[in-house]
Length: 189
Image (tube, rainbow, N blue to C red):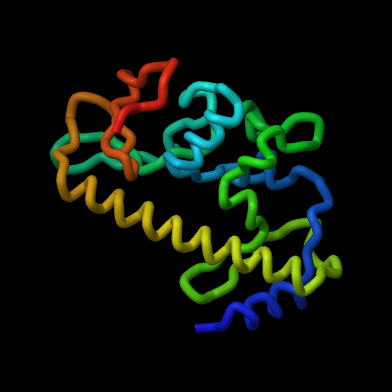
């Protein structure tokens, strides 16, 4: 495994500075602005904005139909309005201090030990070693959080029967029927 210092050096050699182009927040190709979020990230945004769950997040758009007739998706993404993230206004993120892990680490991602770099107008700009270390630190935190979320989802799937009567979202908190979400509160565990 590459060390934190090696990964930071790699990020620094690539270089990055957000140029506030908003391309990552807008639809420029299929699902280019699809931001996966965990229940904890949704709750942080709700706490910061006062919005309800359904105003912050929508079910992940890919669905699964199992052999028992159940139809479901796994996880949530930030709600989108037309061609952009619902939190992108006038060239800025309105939840910047509470933005999800994906947004904090874009255009970088760790795929196991491999650094993945998405296309971005901010690439190639000179950056400090300190800024590169901050990004790799966030990438490692993100990777840990995503692995924990995946394991909790696996446990939910092991412990629960999926309803065949309603479309559901399965996340680390459990199975949530979309039609029964209370529009004024956070879904219960």
